[in-house]
Length: 191
Ligand code: HEC
Ligand code: HEC
Image (cartoon, rainbow, N blue to C red; front, side):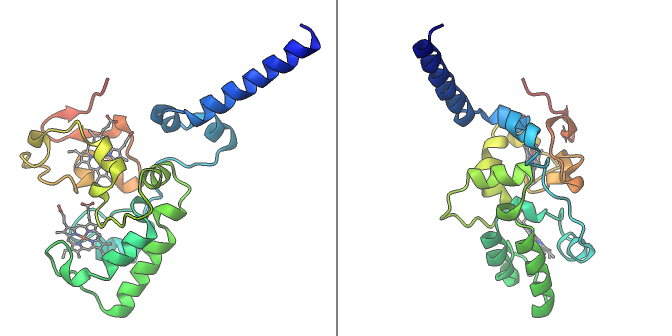
């Protein structure tokens, strides 16, 4: 190889590398991607809830959704409307609400280094302030293979918002495929 062809082939491989880098598929990213694995810049799942007060107050009616499932702007909006919280009154004394909001905002998806939080943010337009995790683009795409029979028509599930009825390790912040079991339908097999 003479000097000129060496330079050209180096240039070509540089271009190929950058293309494969940016065109990394969802599944590559899912497995951590080689850059993520090498440099360990992303933790798995979402950060688990370690705040007992949050677990008590926000886990009494439903699964205590991890702060890393929504951006800070969503949590602030949600906390400002607790008197009409999806049809329920979940109002709290202002000082208590403030403690919880600080916790949610401080650990929100847009500040997280966890893989699922980053992916939720990556798909969310910056102008969106969803109040539901189940209304985010990432969530909708991940759950588009579920049938009505498995969710709304399933007496053991009823609502897609009940994360822990299918994700057996949800409380640990883990939503891996091999931990999914749909009540009455068994383990989730995807091919
Ligand atoms: C009085 C009961 C009650 C309390 C207390 C409560 N919630 Fe809820 N929450 C609900 C109901 C009902 C829904 C709607 C569930 C559904 O659609 O299946 C909901 C839904 C949500 C959702 C949307 C879930 C989705 O579909 O993506 C979030 C986020 C949420 N709650 C956060 C909180 C936080 C944070 C707190 C604590 C400040 C809290 N909730 C306290 C009753 C409650
Ligand atoms: C009725 C059962 C069910 C409920 C309820 C449910 N999920 Fe899922 N979830 C699934 C299935 C099935 C998949 C798809 C797994 C696949 O094929 O990649 C999935 C995928 C996911 C993924 C991506 C996992 C991966 O490996 O790609 C995340 C994150 C997730 N769910 C979070 C949640 C959260 C948060 C909630 C509650 C707000 C929730 N899910 C409620 C069944 C459920």
